Length: 430
Image 1: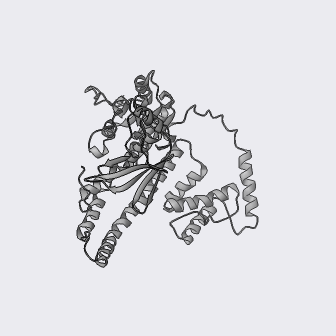
Image 2: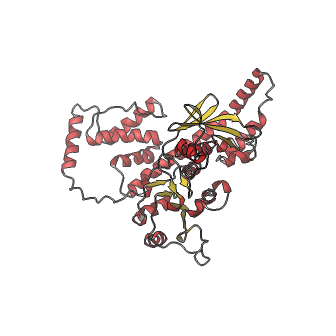
Image 3: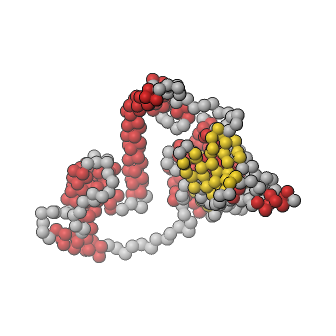
């Protein structure tokens, strides 16, 4: 049994992905205003909850502000990278100009770019008030007007729209013919979707994972290689790590003579990855690289084999770990049969449930003794009389050790039941 979560302990919040400073502040609020005993008067328990909420409001506001700042930084960095790679547009240039010349944040920089682009291509002046924005209406319209003027618009000129439209048409007519663009024969890893539960499960021996050396070792909660290898049957999967020396098998320690080497160029990286994947076929590929590592893999994407399902993790470390766990849930060990399809999750009052096909897995509360009880049901009631592909009877009542493991346990049970039939159980009994 895992140790119970203590909200007054900063380490427990850190283990759940919180920043150390935020974790300490949240834990302090819980320490100063802990829950009262269950037999305390309701009014006192409600008052204690309001006190704790008031104490945590500045913390939550600070977390939200930092999150917005990180998102803006990420958005501007992506736009800048698109322009440097030759994939940006004139509007992207205007977004960065709004930031650099006028100090706008992401929302107002985009309103500035809306005005600039409207004037540049000959559109009439029209405020995009319907676009969500955290700034006030006056600030949004001010940024739009400033961009509109910078783009050549003049609202005092009666013939402004006609003049700008003519100028835009002349620019288009004098542009050189667009070069022939050869589209890549396969999607780049940077454009792959995030892992979901809808794709078909695949045998571990037909699965490939590519991760960074930063995702190996260290804190067990963030050791992605350790999380992968902890799954039953995952030892048959192919795992490749990108280290400073290049691509290596994650199962083999990096040679001491290569530990201090630095990857020379992308051509060498392509040769390394090609040697590791030669004559290999996969049904499911997961890429866990981010930033410059992902750009490197995009540049040598032709080395990767085509697969039925190709996905990548993204965003924060916490979301990357969630995406990895979703991908791991689709792994199949030898001799195991699982159903595919999207699981529909929901909650009614205090009951958490998931549905797949005709089956519903429902958390019904504490199990006798310890743990939590999950029941698999059909419309007719408890799902009894079902067996797996090898004839092993499936138990419709499952005990899960902690609430944190409810969702993966319920997903596994639903896929096992959806892949079984009552005929199999009947045949075994006969």
